[in-house]
Amino acid sequence: MIAALRARWRRATHSLRARLVALFLLLALATAAIFLGGMQRWLTAGWQGWVQPLAADYVDRLAAEIGSPPDVARAQALAARLPIRVRIEGPQVQFDSQAGRAGAGDDDDRHARRGDRSPPWADWLQRDTADGHRIRFSAAAPVAEVDRPRRLGWITLGLLLALTGVAWAVVHRLLRPLGPIGDGVARFGRGDFAQPIALARDDELGQLANRIDGMARSLHGMLQDKQALLLAISHELRSPLTRARLNAELVDDSEARSALLRDLAEMRDLIASLLEGERIAAGAPALQIEPVDLGALVRELVQTQFAGRVLQLAVDAPAIAVRADPTRLRLLLRNLIDNALRHGGHAAEPPQVFLRHEADGRLALGVRDHGPGVPPEQLARLGEAFHRPDSARTRSAGGVGLGLYLCRLVAQAHGGELRIRRAGPGLEVAMVWRPA
Image (cartoon, rainbow, N blue to C red; front, side, top):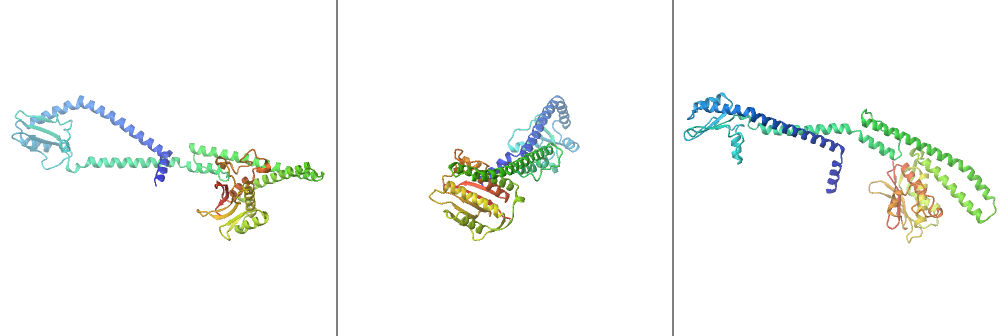
């Protein structure tokens, strides 16, 4: 739970949308603070310079009209005529024009109930008469407006939240193309150039998507040219290679003749692997899909092509029927078994050929050996063309580095992946996919 919350928090803090909305809010708050601060200083200066003297003179006139000693009738008349509250405190008269009512203008009463000091305007809104009475003036608000400031506060908060939601929606709409752009880049990274991003936008994001599409078309063209060149070279090499092998067969038996035939056979296998790899790289269109009993395919391959070799067989079910290319599956399984026998065949426990259901419902077809394995830093590069974990190995001992490469292409052509992981001891390599 904590890990999930941390992951969500990390995504939120690293979200460009959240950062832009936060920036907008900070700018709005900073602008409002600067505006209110400037207006407050301007109003304070204006109040002290112009309004306060006029208001003080007006309060003096109101106090003089009430008289000394204070006349309650005049005070009531003033309160009825003007939107003010009049209170008189003294030895002879105790009067409140709003006795029994709680008005929004009762600011000094609220300050007194909270234990705060009197508001700053209380001193110049009160006058002391010569006979010991104190007359206080304040604004009188209707009873219905007592809770108006609180309502205005909630309305302001609601408007701020609504403004934040609108800002989030606008930013989300503006940055919505980032999703298709990211998906398109991921497809291009996997070598899938069939579907362009094709974003119908005229802004900077639309221009970026068009440039990425152009880059993808250029890369696709270069890859196609490379594949065509590789296929042409491979095809052209097969004829002279065949003639060279026929001529070598005519040479008298000797150690040099045997070495030459081995080298020619290795070149033949290398060219065949390159051609097969380029065909498989075309993906699903290059496959010959048909119903396949995986269990029977695994047992038949082990019994015919690896007869006499010590192998463990672990088939999850007696019959697992899928739609796949049986020829390419045999190629994958044969390469995996050859690799396991080459690097783990001398271990105390023989390699294991397995076919099982994974926890997520996918199928796993692969081989696990009990040999020395590979260093962790080499795992990411296994499956690359012509890569061998130990560069000092000879080709006869370590192969040419195309076996796992072909296995990876077969797995990807079937919509799966080639999973390579350390088994401790040894290495486990499997094609993991979800059959159609």
